[in-house]
Image 1 (cartoon, rainbow, N blue to C red):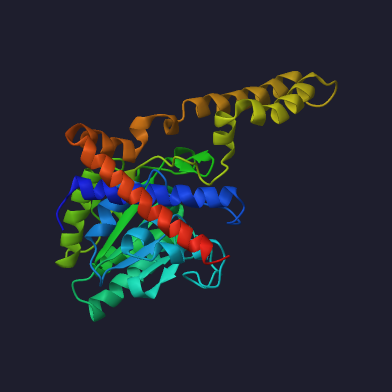
Image 2: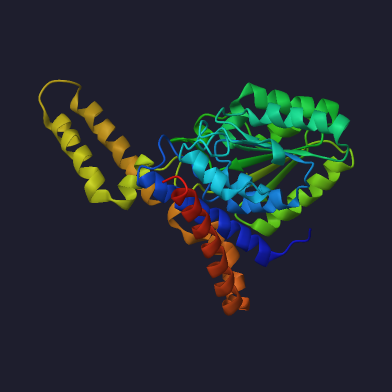
Length: 342
């Protein structure tokens, strides 16, 4: 498959619209539990998954919906699974994190770092059962502090397994900046385990495509694993309802319940010294200021926006037709999933 920016944008848009539909169902209370969307990761997913063959395998993290969709899993089955229905992809028992499709050789897990061992296992099986096949692991930067992922990198290097490790790095470990909990530099860590390290702009689908293309060819020809470090921005934070984004988007509604207790604690007699209480207030203010400067607020950090701009300039009518078609397809899938469960 060749690099086709129109096709890649269509795939990215499909992922975005599908996950936005999931968000609406979650908001309506039809999907329960935490919801981790992959909005902001579309360029990474679309740059890798369409290049895979039927015999290749996918090991996914808790944001596996888009990859499952581009792998060819029925979107209606995905939605029914999230809705908890018995006719869902996994019988309605897994929700959006542990998704499995034997037919597509794809599995996701909510366990941080579990994608490494799964991909290594897939790759080892491919060596004996499907020569020329590869395995791909998608995970976040926080997973790089999990022992099982580091052990998988080491094993893949020692055994020269056909694995592509893809780190989707948004710079955050839930609400903690990654640099505050991760020592050293990721490239040095990866190269120290004997795995080639390829940094790439995870907001540029063409750049991801080219990096993945070279890594997949290398793996298929027996060259062993590659690690792609793709930086991105999670547009909805760690999960839907992310507190910092709620405060940013609805400051009056969200700040009133917080401001009152803070002021009362600051002015009350007794308790901690006034200086310590002021330090606590300064921390809260610093967090809010950081939220205002959050990269999620800029369009240039949206991979769909970046992919769309040159297409709009080249042929706006074709772009409009493409977007209408994709929107219609996603809407039909959502309608089918919801209606058949009534």
